[in-house]
Image 1 (cartoon, rainbow, N blue to C red):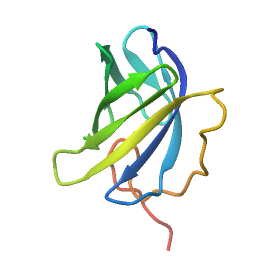
Image 2 (spheres, one colour):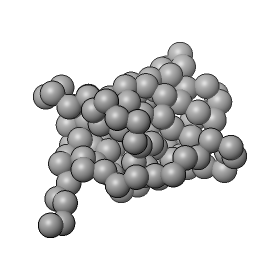
Image 3 (cartoon, helix red, strand yellow):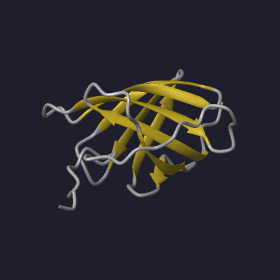
Image 4 (cartoon, rainbow, N blue to C red):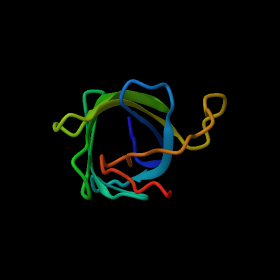
Length: 111
């Protein structure tokens, strides 16, 4: 199974059901690009993502065009995520604004 290609990452910090969304591309060399770059690894159906620009680490399972799991900054911030291959129909909810980015960095919220 190849996970390379364009995906939409939906993430929710804390215990909310509101998911923010970013587009990322998983490259064949084990890196990913998008609003935040990083590294990814897939082994035996387990997917790991690590952002270069923040403390967040993602871990979960992948099956075809979808993946899901949990993420943590290991500093008190935890959440859940799911990934949908771009072009997959029928499972794209509305995105919400986030106060923490996908990499686990707090965003500046305009006053």
